[in-house]
Length: 377
Image (cartoon, rainbow, N blue to C red; front, side):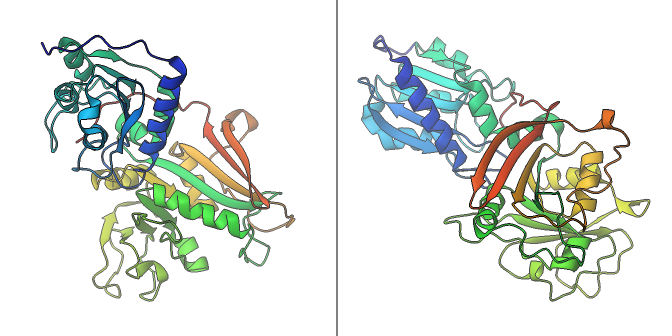
């Protein structure tokens, strides 16, 4: 057993402040750590002063604890580590973080989300056996919310899906003539690039590809990792000059098994079977999961959104509502298999904020909860 001095009494408010900072740090890894979770770590010295911070930046790279310990150096001895996920206990592509904390002389570890994976769990036990005070479940709900995409992906075996849409206040996604640029203001459009930067993949269907010729790459977000642009086009009617096929970000074309793709040489292609002329949502999500995608931003039109909702594959909704009325034109959501009010998908609103002149509403289906889950390495 390691020889550690007894930790000094700690301040509850300081604990909250340090863990919330760790949660903020973890969010910096959104979009670049898959298939791993996002994790943040803050280290304070024996006097409670922050001496090291870190977050998991990419899969296969050092974990958050290692970055924070490197920043803290000798000042970590006798200090406290605040981590958003229980420190891992096994050697994968990186070494066990629990052991690194012990060797640094940390006397107390506070973590938010426990890790029950038999391959990676046991970090808290290892810490306690070495004489380190380990406390779990601290601000667990807040930390789990920040890791919702990874936790959902591990629980369901498919990527977490956020459906993003923009609409007028009366729920129209375009005018009667099909024009839709721009329903929302420039601040909302800039905010969408933040959502893209936080996702592993951005997904649209053939209707949106033909009507809008979207680009889908991230712009205006410093240091962003470009998401995979997923173009779902059953007949592969995508034009070779489509903006989504430029070199600004990687692109995956998803088409039916018999689609003619000879006019698209060199395009990364995924062929999936058709069911009643459509690609099944869960076939698509399963294939993306197998490619390491853990979070998807669904930017498709009302038809594709309806298919995802009917399949029970929408985990979060982000709606940008513009203070405008159109009166006619396509609705933001098409048929989702809901035939009466009793089958309505009820949502829990988690946030409602002004973005420029628009209102951004974030909501999750009431049946969705954020589970704890094992780490992946």
